[in-house]
Image 1 (cartoon, one colour):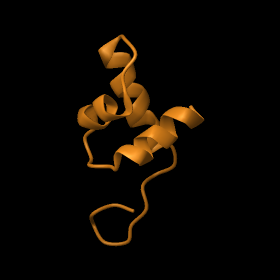
Image 2 (spheres, helix red, strand yellow):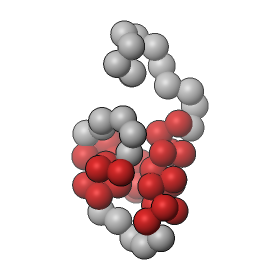
Image 3 (cartoon, helix red, strand yellow):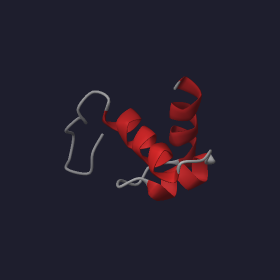
Image 4 (tube, one colour):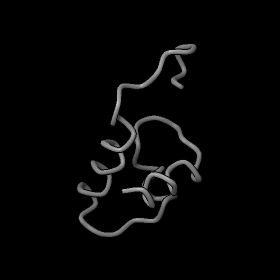
Length: 54
C-alpha cells in the first residue's frame, strides 16, 4: 500500500524500482543497499523478498 491512504501501487512498480536500482549500480547489491537506493521507503525484508523472487 502507498502512503496516500489505501491506494495500491501499479503492477510491477516495486520490481521495476528494484531492477532500476540494480542496473544503476552496475554491480550486485545487498537488500539494504537496494532499499537505500529506492525512491519509496520499504522494509528490508520486503526488498529481500523481491530480490529472491526476481
